[in-house]
Image 1 (cartoon, rainbow, N blue to C red):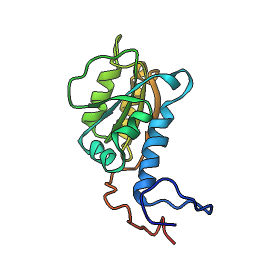
Image 2 (cartoon, one colour):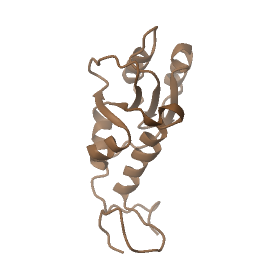
Image 3 (cartoon, one colour):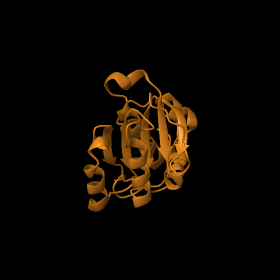
Image 4 (cartoon, rainbow, N blue to C red):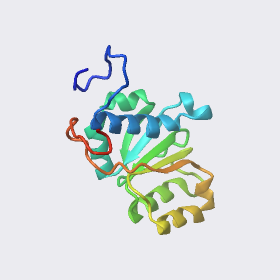
Length: 167
């Protein structure tokens, strides 16, 4: 078995993945793929990220990978965005007070920017920020997922071997 970045191999033993592939799989399948639930399976989504999470995503995934998972538009959370009330949004953001306030602003009120929000934090969220989200009952009904991904790193080298992944 080679150490290349290819996704396919004729080797029939256990599948070993490098660090970049593990990160890519988590982003594409655990995060983007998990937003394909129920009636939203066939609809396109908006992916909203901040500066750091854009870098995390770009080190591991290609735009074609993201599109294949049902994302039609990628937006910056810090910029003014067009309302798309018929589309679901996937937020991949750092758990900062500014990002949480922007998310709550997007999804609150009588006419939120998006139909449903799937929120994925790049690192653990503080109890204070989590409580702030829980207090907004209008927004709570519009959340499809709220998870910590713990992916606040850049998978620059595909050959990185950590004691956790290698034996």
